Length: 575
Image (cartoon, rainbow, N blue to C red; front, top):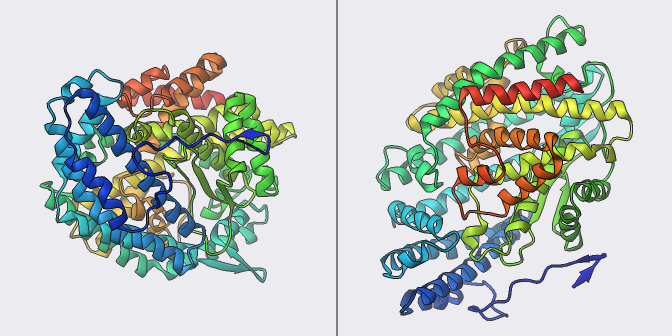
């Protein structure tokens, strides 16, 4: 089917569910689960067909939930959309969990399962089934529902935050653009209004986080783990690394990256000719140039992204064009929209949805590159046999997005026709990487602490945050008089509330992305081929094997991090 000069992919034909089947209630879904539970299986091929039918059912359910979530985050003030999402997570999802556990046990007990191990992806799938069976507890089903309902409150609270500047109501992402103003008083005004607005809800968010920690800790205890952190390492399928590897990553970042953070901040302070470098001085161009503006409208952002991806590879550009033609892009910031950005895979349609809050700055341009990388990943895995194979671990998913940020830089001239602006954009992005790695370590270490000490009180939480934040931040920025603002910086991080422990992946993947970019700089054709070859594996191989397919290492040792950071330093010097 053609639309807007692109070919819209055909949805995979249903072979188990009726073509007109729609997810309405649990009673409508239950007969298909009953079929899977009661079906007799007499051969390896029949077992494989059973897996395919189960995958089809799960894809339809997943996509139905996805649309409910997408619509809710696009309009957090709409009670009907919120109720629709809540209906799924309270009336349908809790019924699915115990039945899925029974299906996992049925598959694991099959005498034909061993014969599938040699089939592409099934070794990984079986490992996942065993993991799911190990951690499932009936008593965690209502807790999971409660957790999801509580976690969505963060989006509603944050989405309602606005500030008034110069008589104009702005969302916080819109106001944050003023932090790039060359007028220091304007920057300070914007910073103080943003942080004060956040502090208005600090007690509400503290209570919310405390409640989430208690719910999650109980889930971990119910499953036989000493804490939620250990439970989540199993639940997230972290077979290829341990909490100690995370701690080693933290130490390596403190040793190899934080000193560079101090260098950048010192240089910024000197260039700006300031006696004191303040938090509102961290985003402005130090040479006094106005903020970079790579696009004016979301349509322009989309058009240029399609061109940029197409310059890398026509296939990549066509994927974003398909999403545009299907209405699978919601990019601009507006009141009532949930914060942040995401790429949501749609497993039946096979064409994902990108959500973000663009306000015409460089960070927005990088965000569409990032989410576009996720989208490309969805397209590259859409033909894999099972939905499980199309859902890679986040260490691989974030490799797709963060590598795209870097390899796309060769074509950022589409956004910046002025050579100096182009250089500045690249420099700012590379500096942002140096700043991102310590922030990842900060958020990750804070989560480890929070769930290792689930009975902590608010003062203890703030003390722990400040100690961790100080470890990974520069010692040049002057926070005097802003102690409370600094103490609550963690509350802006959606992941802490919505997707716990999903953050260290950004650090690991950032290292992998730098390595892919390094390969790309040496040989663009080989580097891009490695990138695509790795992504199209989905989750049919282990994380180290996927990284190996991209000609890089899954490694977070001090020596490896040092070598990659030196490469970034060298590239910065060339800009």
